[in-house]
Length: 481
Image (cartoon, helix red, strand yellow):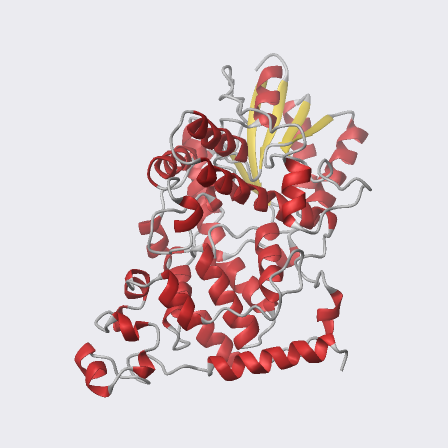
């Protein structure tokens, strides 16, 4: 192929529209589209099973959009990319920036290698509305509280750039003697052997087109009433865009402007749209924290929690992981996670609080389990979220704020639709006892077909006693004893 060839390195930007790096590469000549599975540099944050399942199907969709010409490899990008550039006489390599510490280190190394070869390597912002180094306090330090970060930082900065179209002239270069497309994707062996992948397949449509369909479905059916109804797991007022954003099948810019356009056109309430946009702001906040505090996934942001008196009980941890705690709203959430690779955000807070405050198990256990099971497992969001729940992170929920799984279930799943869906063995219990089946008279349990300790577990702990124990442990930490 005559003329300049630029490599576009796909990472977490598995889309054609609003892809700044792809657009830059396409504007300069032919493009060799490349994806490299890097399990070498990721260390402890090698992708989990649910993430690998999603990635497989997302790569299939991307390859189809590229006419079956996606070059797919596995290995070390610091070796593969320079070698590819030499093999095809590439003029440049383009990619969209990622913010995980291990990726920042690796990408800097690649840029240095390219400079040594006289090869242009250019990174772009295709993942965030604002770069982490753009949103800082007046003294140049990063924000640790969300509201000023979003209101004084993000909204006071220049508005996000408008989304870009699919490159109008996308001339795809081909690599000689290389397996491309679906066959190469299959060789990555991303699909898990667990049978729970069948539940994932029944839950999700994957790819760039599916991402935009999901966005428009939410704007049409879920945005109205979002501010309040997003807290109820049985309602439709959640976007379910987190996985699509994580994998870059849709950009935050596309979501931001689609929501604002809907508001400007007079559809829906401004409060609902503002609240939805602020949730995109929380995503930005998590990435800012990860960028400025790269040890966020492993170390408490509030260091006094380093001496917190955590418990160590593998049996209780397994009960939590499998949704067998005896608290229906907790078990429903954990089973939703295992069946669908997703969990409603309100329920994430409930199950997280139960793990770190009632069971008093370290938040690392929750972060690790979510990392393996979530299709939207994102290092920034997952780490910041678990530190928030545990009370040791930025703008965190105070440790003494403990979600009661009984009252939370009664308030946010009053009709029991969510619990009955994921804990079907309790489906015939009356609403009065659905969140606390141990209080049901024996005749009502028998009529509902519930045998506590057999068909459904008794509570693994007492919420009142465990709450008092958690508060005592926090008080000892606070008092330095």
